[in-house]
Amino acid sequence: MITVLLGLGGALVYGAADFLGGLASRRLRPVRVAAVAAVVGLVPLLVGFAVLGGRFSEQAAVAGVVAGLSGAVGVLLLYAALAIGPMSVLSPLTAVFSAVVPVVVALLRGTVLSPLGVVALVVAVVAVVLVASVPDPGGARLTLRGVVTAAVAGCGFGGVVLGYDASPPDSGVATLLVARTLQVVLLGTAALVTLRLGARLRPRPGGTSPAPATTDVRPVAGRVQPGRVQPGRVLVLVVVGCGVFDAMANVFIQAGLHSSDDPSTLPVISVLNALYPIGTVLLAGVVLRERLTALQTTGIVLAFAASVGLAVS
Image 1 (cartoon, rainbow, N blue to C red):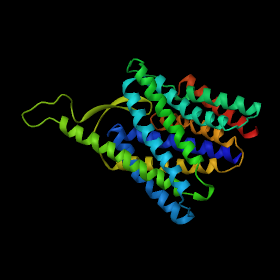
Image 2: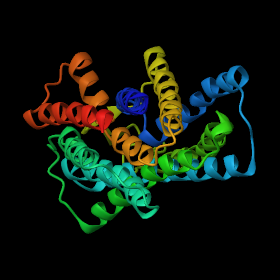
Image 3: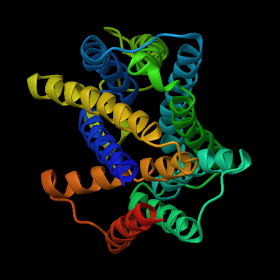
Image 4: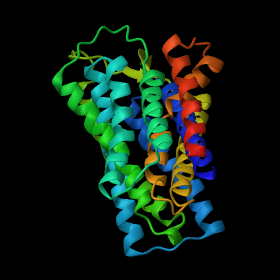
């Protein structure tokens, strides 16, 4: 039961972080938002390490590197996929791969699930697809490149779960700190590269540029919307909240993975973690007054039904 609660809690907090990241991406490029949020996320992890402690070891460091590298690659490829293809297809595809990859790894290790557990996991994956499905007014065409990019991005997010699962039980926040530090370096580098490219494209006095420097198109809460770079106090708070919630979600996920010695913990946490769009769409409904589609409502109902099934299986 505690495993399911931690998995759901992590998914909801992840969803909140994505919602805030989506709001911030209306004003800044997503890769820059992700980089700053990664830096912010170091603060609560450092506080947690000071209070709760943790043990740095070779295994903890390797697990952190795997999680950090996988997460950074997943974020960058997700942005790339959503920029070239229909979100209504590629977003659910990414979520499904993030759920399925750890499940496949667990099954290859010899994990045996109860019949109820198998049914609940299948229902949860269906719920992931339904909840992550969003209208795509952009009319982008589905291409093989977009599908492959989204699938690899999902594998990257699944790698985060596998990395945390491989961390020693006594590592505590140590593994999370290693992963977060690596993400800061990788995402920060990517943000600097985009900043330099943007500066080169910015029109000079008396000259022209092939693309405007202040307006771009980016994913926001499951949609593509235009935005202008106008940082302000509210924007700073939103990015800070994104970073804090993202760090908290990682704590939930790792705690859930080590909450039980049952080998089915990995597939359960991985699938529940993929339900993060629930938090995003619920907040979008409350804050932005966006209406849930019938498919998303059905997905949320199925998600909670699957959670009950996983809890009693």
